[in-house]
Image 1 (cartoon, rainbow, N blue to C red):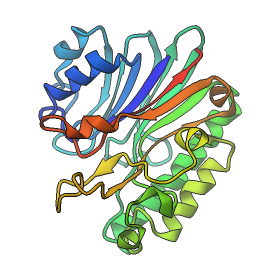
Image 2 (image 1 turned 30 degrees about the vertical axis):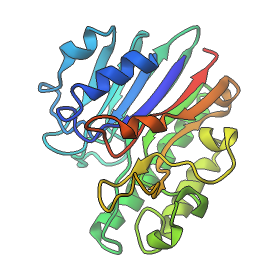
Image 3 (image 1 turned 45 degrees about the vertical axis):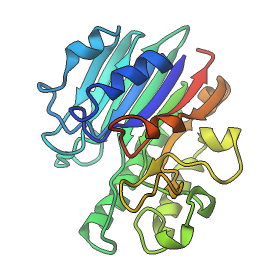
Length: 259
């Protein structure tokens, strides 16, 4: 089972580039972030034509997450538990049924800037809610994959210029500590389990020639429960997608599971 996460920065803007990547990479499951579309406006027919079942949790003009799957999806839920008044569309879950069922959580964690301030408070509160949900998922002892744009630079080696991010919500000590609290529940950070070294990024800003200068950061992650980590056979970043026509500022990150 090949599972990818991809912040597409607007489904309308990626209406040609995303299907082209899907045909090339052939993932079984893709979790998308920042679809910036209501459920009704999402272009289902494009992806159904490629063999994908589609589940969305959309929001007009902002945020929005989706799961595309060539494998059966069951028990789909929308919204991160813990705050019934949270109207931001940032979390979707489903069981993907391959040779065994895997619980997939697609997430778009809040950016949090400017920090300090209410947006940063929301980010940390959201991460606390995520930790609670993550603990519940671990307790099931099922294979679980939490994949998405975490808006967290976990370590300095995950940025080409770490000094430029010292005061940013993506790399503040409290942000990194909140991320570690989730990982330390018992999750494996898939990419770091395969590649411990520096120089690997999943996001390059559109500004200041960041892509040409390889001034990137790694903020798109897949966290695996022990049962999922035992099934992992590979994890890669599709870096070359950033050089394509009308690219997102993020690129896909994917894993393969023996499932």
